[in-house]
Image 1 (cartoon, rainbow, N blue to C red):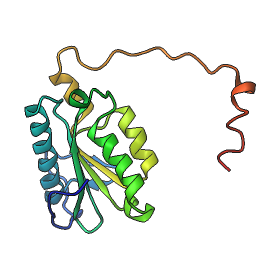
Image 2 (image 1 turned 90 degrees about the horizontal axis):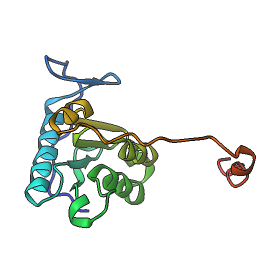
Image 3 (image 1 turned 30 degrees about the vertical axis):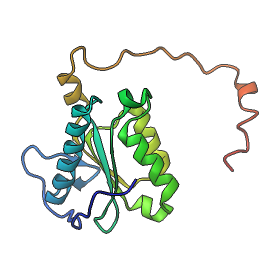
Image 4 (image 1 turned 60 degrees about the horizontal axis):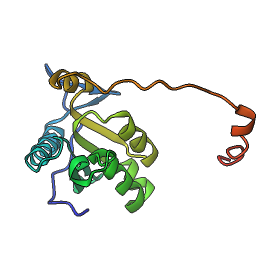
Length: 168
């Protein structure tokens, strides 16, 4: 996934103003806002192409756009084709762990739980998003997806056998 271009280096030192969010002590800077605007552009392109309106990009430690993508759930007929998931997988596969840890994902909406799991496992260092999940759900008729009941745990003694010792 080649980047479309280069972006300037980030400055995380700007204090928060009204309407700005803080995540784990980080601030959303003017540079962050520029990258978020690119994510929003990708979301608009996605919608124009017939897919859901979500876009994301990865910015490396030097401020270079490393990769970007948009939602292709409809066009790929793949419920997992979210840009955040695709980029997290790309980063884990193509970048060394130190670069991944120093990379920021910018995304038009807060990642869903599927994508967030991939982001955690990829080792990305930071995520900055435009719309929060609650804000997004307020814009969607019917809100969020229905909850699916989960039942368990069960069969612990049997289920632990293939897992035990794997994570040592």
